Image (spheres, rainbow, N blue to C red):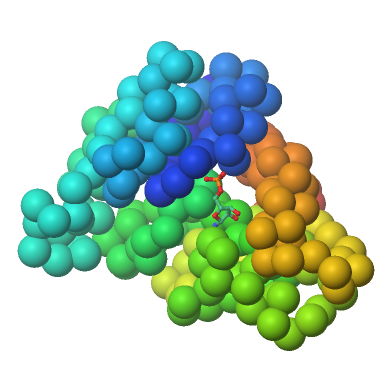
Length: 203
Ligand code: GAR
């Protein structure tokens, strides 16, 4: 079975979906790492008897040094695949090169809309609300050296009436994220996704 590391900064509901439906079935979650000391994601990991590590960015001088520390943890746990599940930091080449085509991210919009620098968490849903789009959704993609620019694995849409507040948009999108992430991670762990230039195809 392949080994995963899940990186998360917040509540970790996507991590929970992976614990419930992928862990010990399609692959093993070997370690959960957070850049936030009080991230609920760390508690979810501990409850599931998965090693949970807080990596403190303020202890090192640069983002590269921080990612080098994370890389050491990944190697210590013999991690094959990294899943970013609400991890609100941008990875440096230290990680994107060491794990090229082996890092999966979930983003709460239909890429290429509402993505890139500054678009994370509630900022995405606020922008969706401000623009008044009637379809939003979620995207799971491989991570490359850009921000939200890697090959797309799966997307799913959510229809909006226009009456939802940003918090309601976030809740509607989160509801479909869990399913989408579980399906995408399962495909990758089972080697069913091939990257052809900037696209992915199902084997
Ligand atoms: C999710 O909506 C995820 O798509 C988003 O953070 C939330 C984490 O929720 N990620 C990003 O915005 C990455 N750019 P969770 O902690 O409950 O899984």
